[in-house]
Length: 145
Ligand code: SF4
Ligand code: SF4
Image 1 (cartoon, rainbow, N blue to C red):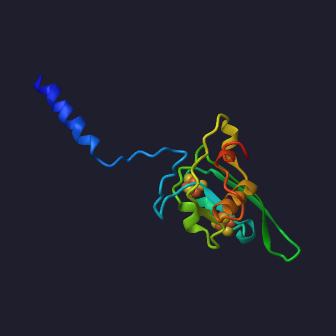
Image 2: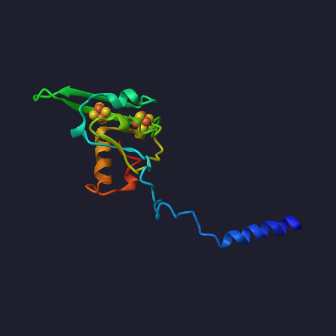
Image 3: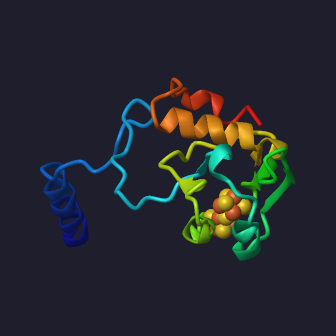
């Protein structure tokens, strides 16, 4: 009986506390400035130095480039496998041009593992969405590649 009353005391004490749960997805969490979500990519900034791919501890970045008429290297393909990316931020730390950066996007849930491979167009679209250039539609993140 004493235990039961003790339990009730804890329950009633909690009733007056401020709620910490959110009605997600109607209510989005307030991310801290240093939150590390999935990446955004600016193809025009990439100099194909390969540093991001080399530093990646899970080898989830693959890229290729070619030399253009201006004799400079340009990115042709840039893919991240978010099945194994651990969002460690190392790739963005080493990037000399800030072509690859983290965002606060985190909604990648999908029923298909192949959807977790994101190419440079998806990553560039993610940049445009997070910078407000493209409309942000969270429901589209899981399905596109
Ligand atoms: S965040 Fe880490 S694991 Fe993910 S792509 Fe960058 S270096 Fe690789
Ligand atoms: S480190 Fe930056 S500039 Fe170099 S290949 Fe990666 S994204 Fe491109």
